[in-house]
Length: 191
Image (cartoon, rainbow, N blue to C red; front, top):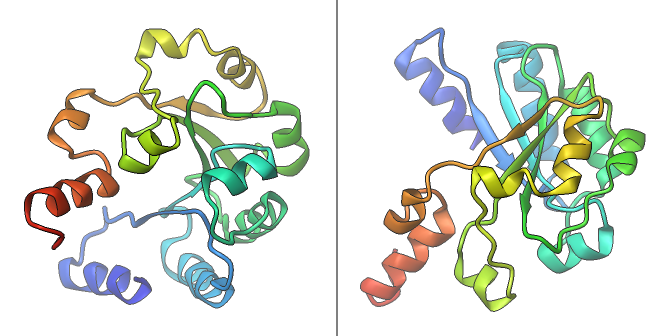
């Protein structure tokens, strides 16, 4: 992926190019992340969007939501501070369902608000989400009912509530997992 980021930049030679990576930071990827950090420091310097999908501040719940090995919140915080060069902050993404646990105080104790921003998004209606009874795509109005969102917005972090268009769910354009399941369903398992 790092090679692809650089190939796009070279091929299109544009000054407005901003790479964007969203990740859960899987275990065993430290070398790759070191290369990414070097690339950011040497080339992009604040013009790179890095997002960690953490979904909960409770490690047990994170393990349930993302059962594969992943970095701890503390390791994400350490890396984010090393990665950040000014400009666009490193984003911590929470795809919320009503049962998700977000502890604003824990976030403040682990993550530096000068380096990290918070993004709240609805949970995409994937097959895995349905199987785990995690379906909860909320609207802009419903997002205001979440006390944790209000608490985060009153805290030190930049907080972005990104609802998107519900039509994207219907046409399966907002999530790679949804699109993949659509292809598998309609083409007999080949994507």
